[in-house]
Length: 234
Image (tube, rainbow, N blue to C red):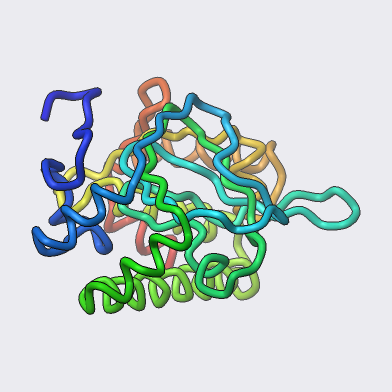
């Protein structure tokens, strides 16, 4: 598929076999195409907001979103970045509660929107979808656990930042050898995820670049020495 283009149907998507939830049989994929509506959002657009009643589940087709939660004092915590193949709003849909987070695009993003009632019927119609949904929930739990452990148990900010960069690069690579991704977060947002200050993030990124661990070309960040960065993140 040419760069910058995406398939209008899940059935024709050349990336579906690489993605956990989308790797379904032809029958299930055709059903998903029937009930899903593809929507394109610009950067910094809200897909859904924390506290809103859950009305739909979203599959990320292209782009990135940040998932965040707010405190009663107005503080914001970025919980994770959502990438292609991720399923958003799943726990709220299954429990029939409000969305727990706000999903905001970081760049032009394409989503497949499935109404909650139709998604629940989709689950009942295809046993494999139930399995994929359980796997997606397990992955979500593991990601949250690892993020909490990183923040709570990693004493060094450089360790936390290195782990973030490696995780994002590995997700974006989809099995390809080169570890590169688009850094759509500002340094302030990156600091929020790493539990530090913007100034510290800027200093550490510059240090990683001087040490030839990473390279930056505009918004693109490339991991040059993954083994050394992984040792730092251990």
